[in-house]
Length: 308
Ligand SMILES: Nc1ncnc2c1ncn2[C@@H]1O[C@H](COP(=O)(O)OP(=O)(O)OP(=O)(O)O)[C@@H](O)[C@H]1O
Ligand SMILES: [Mg+2]
Image (cartoon, rainbow, N blue to C red; front, side):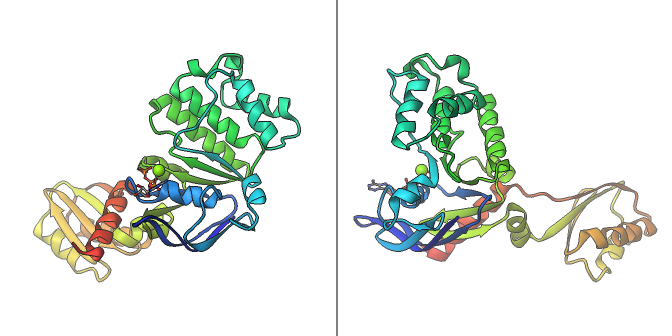
């Protein structure tokens, strides 16, 4: 659905996006993470054919940006960081203007469908200037979907929304995904990315890493199991360290954190040995790293590589 080759954008001396090689499959939710100024919005603007690259190429839905921009734009809906709406017009009028621009055929029914889906139908006749931020955000999402694009760009869709409004938008993203649409999501909410995304890409001018949240965790931290005991005795420590599959053991009070490759197969053996050594096993669980841990590790690594 999205493919780029060496996609780059320079603003004067400032290289905003550098040599981006990206592939996003149809039906995928792809979350784009990176610090402020990392080039996320610029990438979205490049892919939506709103700005031209200074180097490299991009294809959206099979159409190349800069070559076939009309088809590129028809293929996508976009929620920008600051969705411009006509404040004096009501919700229906706002959407109608946009629907005409995109040559939507069944304007009235499409507008009703999305205003209902986003919970704005009862407010459809009110001037948008009086809408709350969350309502405007939802209206802008409705606008992005009116022409039923297969690809949706959402640039920080839940930023500045209250928890309930943010959850509504997240649920909606899940529904849209269920329809088989591809979603390219820029967010600073790492938990949101973790919950919604099939894969995440971390960018800082360059693409630092792309993978599923689970694979990123594993590649960075390996797998670890945390075992809490009544007490950690010397025989227990010996029994654990004698197991060949145990790669590392850390002890804090009565808890052992053990690195191993295949907990599904190795945990039963591990627990059996601990029990045989007289250990009273109270809890066993896998150590779970948040996507936030992963994110900071990746950003830190990329800074060390670059040097001071
Ligand atoms: N129109 C522009 N003119 C000049 N510089 C720009 C322009 N748009 C973006 N930039 C620069 O490009 C870099 C990347 O900006 P971009 O908006 O893509 O970052 P971002 O990852 O979306 O950040 P944020 O998380 O703050 O939204 C920044 O250094 C920014 O100043
Ligand atoms: Mg941005």
